[in-house]
Image (cartoon, rainbow, N blue to C red):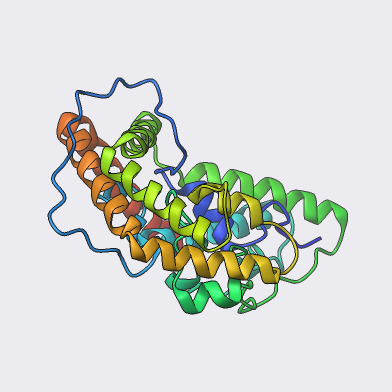
Length: 286
């Protein structure tokens, strides 16, 4: 048990703090009458992670700099909390078991398909990258009581660094879900996915879907030869029909329409996020 067992890595912190979501399904906000957006000449992003970060609604979440500041604030607040609880030798480095940064190309597949570069798919499959070695491994807790106190302090720190505008965060999540729903129904995405399915069947992987592939193979253990073959075929079939380029272009187009329909509320939320960034800067420097 590490001092912050409730959070095993910095990646978990960022996932908990990120105000935008990628799950399917809209929330309680009714979507306006969306129309199929123009595509132009859609180009696939360099990686799934970069594609997600470039989406219009991602501008209302935490960028990489803000995410790093949030993590630093969690470390600082956790250490302060532990000191107040009587654990004077607890440091900011003991707050989280943070590994090195994962390259964008190796990040877990994002989007409604297993989107990986050929050189990554051939060795990684759908398992995601091997965890980078932590820059500094937090010391084990001196006792069970210290470990429990660290968990509580991390929880309090996470609550403190979340945006105060919870309703705004929920709205962004809802709009993200609505844009994903609309993208999944878009005729151009449906056609590109159908072409992908035919390509995968020809490669020996019938009766599968882009997101189903990831669900089938992702899990504990090392990737099997079958998984690596499926991931390699997936990369080839995704590129052959430009599924990634079409999917991201369509998704971005629907998101722009949703943002235009909620400009005032989203602007207020963005302002609250900016104000939080100022507060976090002060917390980190304290």
